[in-house]
Length: 307
Length: 256
Ligand SMILES: Nc1ncnc2c1ncn2[C@@H]1O[C@H](COP(=O)(O)OP(=O)(O)O)[C@@H](O)[C@H]1O
Ligand SMILES: [Mg+2]
Image (cartoon, rainbow over all chains, first blue to last red):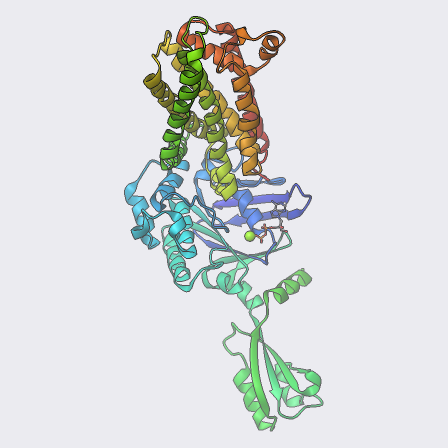
């Protein structure tokens, strides 16, 4: 099937001379939820802005549903909705005015019933005549989502959708994304939280320093990324790892006062219960256990080194 | 872009008119008060000591100049603010990402700004009628001048709004350039009455051509021939259009 969005060789050097994006190639499948995962400054917003026509690319081409984003901008853009990272909106207009404005701007005829439904889905309907400036930050973000959905886009971009968002909005947002996907909308979101990519996405692209490092099915990626560590603080220091524990490939830490066990969090058997049992059989006591996920930084370092 | 995004243009136009509506009170009251003050000060206090200009009573003679003064400053500042505001608040991202061509954006923003200033021009005209007898020899020409001037200077304001980096810059051109040029361009006197070299100097003032043409539509005579007046507006309109086209071609100040 033809990808709904096809990015080829897109690069960006800003006027300041800063190279924000190396040549990026990316295909987005119709109807999928795609997460662009990367630390701050990786180039996520730059890539999205180029696709949406807000930033001029320095090189490359973009096809939206087969339409060139520059030569056939009208067709390309009318298919895209964007929820930006910043809460930028006209603060003086009402929710209803700003949402219907967005619909018109994107070339659609007025449709009261549809716009009302969008507001209801976002629990905004009772606020429809409220000026935007009177709303809380979370509510403003909902308005931005409503604006992006007002013209019934096929592709929805959400740039850092959960940054500074409370739990209830987060839940509403995931529910909305779920129902949008059921209706066939393609969703592309950016995030710097692995958990967020893990929670929602079908596929994940990892971006760092303007380079798209890899694109994979989420499950496959989570296997790679899902390494966890367990630190065991020992009651008595050890000189060496006993041969009986060789199966777990432990490392000695803290001059023999601790053990480090790396395991796969996604695997059916973590190996932790059997390890602890064997340790007690051997009479190795411990005072504390601590597990942690490898941080995004570790993962990026890992990925970059592996290339 | 192919085709025409009529809904988009309408959305921008309505949005801008709604913004005007929110400040309707100032938009209407301010010109009415200013005009009344001019008539009280110039028309009554000073005008009673002045003879007629070119066979027209001084109070009536003032009307076209007063309208022109407001028309120019209002057109520029409305259109400039209209496009500057989205840049300032960051909402310009939506305009840039929308399937709206440069021409459509200009029609929406400049159309709304021009509508507002034509409205203000007509309000001033109506206010004047309370103070002095109105005489309009060429009504259609008067309306055409009103519209054309409003459009041209709204377009000029749009350019300023795109160029501006801060609120101060929005006011620089209206206050430091347009208002002086209007005052010196014969808004309140006939430049024919100026001694040399000031008369010749005034002929280099573009606003003099506008005021003169506009005054002709009222009283059937102006300081400068009608052809020159129309020629000037056409030239300035073409220049502004050229700059706007260039701005959108290059993404100047709107896109990085
Ligand atoms: N308008 C701009 N001019 C110059 N540099 C920019 C501009 N916008 C972003 N950058 C730089 O480009 C890099 C990528 O930024 P961005 O795309 O916003 O990253 P992300 O969204 O992944 O945090 C950053 O180093 C940022 O400082
Ligand atoms: Mg960003």
